[in-house]
Amino acid sequence: MARTGDDQGPVAAIGLMSGTSMDGIDIALMRTDGERVVERGPAGTSPYEPAFRRRLAAALETAKTIERREQRPGELADIERELTRRHGAAVNAFLDEHKLGPAEIAVIGFHGQTVLHRPERGLTVQLGDGPLLAGMTGIPVVHDLRADDIAHGGQGAPLVPAYHRALVANLPAALRGSRPVAFVNIGGIANITCVGRRGELVAFDTGPGNALIDQWVAAHAGIPFDAGGAIAAEGAVLPALAARYLGHEYFRRRPPKSLDRDDFVPPAAHEASLEDGARTLAHVTAAAIWRAGDLLAERPGLWIVCGGGRHNRAIMDDLAALAARPAGKDDPPCEVVMAEAAGFDGDAMEAEAWAYLAVRSLKRLDISWPGTTGVVRPMSGGRLALPPARRAIPA
Image 1 (tube, rainbow, N blue to C red):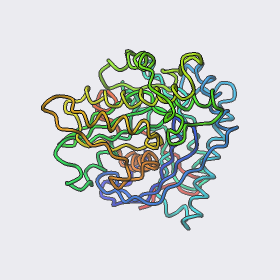
Image 2: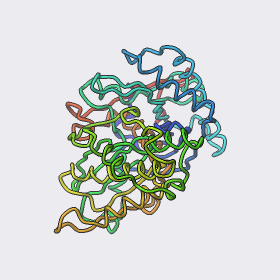
Image 3: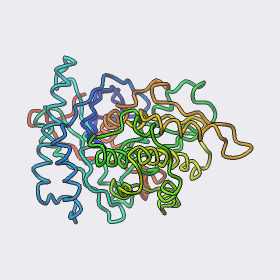
Image 4: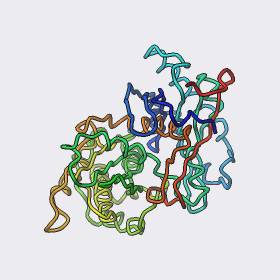
């Protein structure tokens, strides 16, 4: 792995994220030293059209046959190439839009598309061809950031906590307060990072995020997601159905822990109306997030919510209601805010994180810890792909 040099200052980096919701590519630019300096730049999204989303959904089924992470059975190799080309086109369009040249960007952090995540088998698979992306963009690419963590006993997820800690370090003291701060990302799967009073990290997947809701409304209304929670707003929580989900053994498991998209499945069609199903699943997402606080040494005072799920009013209303009721008689209420209220971009945060992690990877800085993924020791990670015309990282 090439190094930028321990004394190097901030560099420009692009982060790319295609999450478990499979709705498109998030792209973000920042200048960072991979440590405390975080200068956030512009961000955007390149959506997938419905036909490609359907191909990705089919890829999840094919990926279940994978036994070794390098395998690409069936159409997976073709989908990987197309996915990578779409990322390359998104980067090049982004550079054109912001009048930037490839030589001005030190590195791209490329997440790829997770199609299989089975850490108990030492297996996580993200589709994405780093060398192809480097060749398309003319920019060095750090990819495959989860593999080393998995190989050393970790869950391979979540990796964003390193970035969350940097963001907390830059929060105004009045907003941060004296208690731990939690970042909650509600994508297809929801996860939490708790940044303790002294910067210590605990992170894990809390449970379903948007994935179950998306699958439910797609199957019963023919639309990809419940925009703003409008469908859920017309329904009611079904206590027995919610209790069945929240009784899952995953919620009793201590962290570190992580989920695959298929670890939870939507209700059967006869179990709920469209509206009640959407409302109940939104409640499950919020309740699972709040229960995560029971697994922490100290419940955070500030909960910062990012990801697409923050736009679902049913989820956010339930979280706010839970936060307003103290966990114990001596516990003060907690505050739940959307990322924007804390000065962040809730849609771009994961893409920003991948830019930040790419720079940390180049500098061989740790990106995962026993408290975040369960890895045996603090670990760096990632693979570096250089474009043919650039055989060194710019100073």
